[in-house]
Image (cartoon, rainbow, N blue to C red; front, side, top):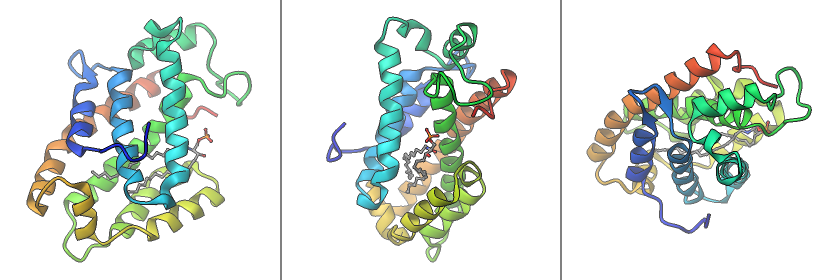
Length: 214
Ligand code: 1Q0
């Protein structure tokens, strides 16, 4: 994954739209990962202060891709089949990080928690005004979600990185979607899909008691 590759937020939206299948009752891993790859490209275009985050995301994406292209790849096609396969085969550390610290279930849980941040941030962005500060929107969304799972040193690094984000109008330019109105239209279009992705994953993990994996 090259950091200079062109990103397109429309493609990100298409990936997260098309990852939902069977009437929103499952998620295709490949399309979900494509959505993340697009977000990582976007993040890389914001500058090197985010590279500690993008490195972590890239390594998580790569682990999932190794599972997908491996011998058991068929089991990793959707969230549902992955969860069932890994639980049935005792491939998930349920109580402490032990033999399977990189289970697919755990990797997707990490991304799912970031997805919640994204959902909160996009909603704040959608309802923001000209004088809203992107760094504040990011930090508020973070403290309401992902921060609860991070130790203080990561929280500090993350909040410091947010401070480096550009002003709202520059941020919209980097998004490269068009005018502010067009950005807001895209966000309005994206929110329901983001909710469907989040809600399905949350329900699946809750049903299998996987929301607090170590
Ligand atoms: C716009 C700014 C982007 C801000 C992204 C916020 C996410 C903060 C994530 C902080 C990650 C800290 C680095 C690693 C932490 C790990 O300890 C943790 C747990 O993993 P493990 O295996 O050690 O237990 N990892 C995570 O929590 C996963 C972190 C993945 C970060 C993925 C970021 C991917 C890109 C996000 C794009 C945001 C673009 C938003 C704008 C979209 C506009 C339409």
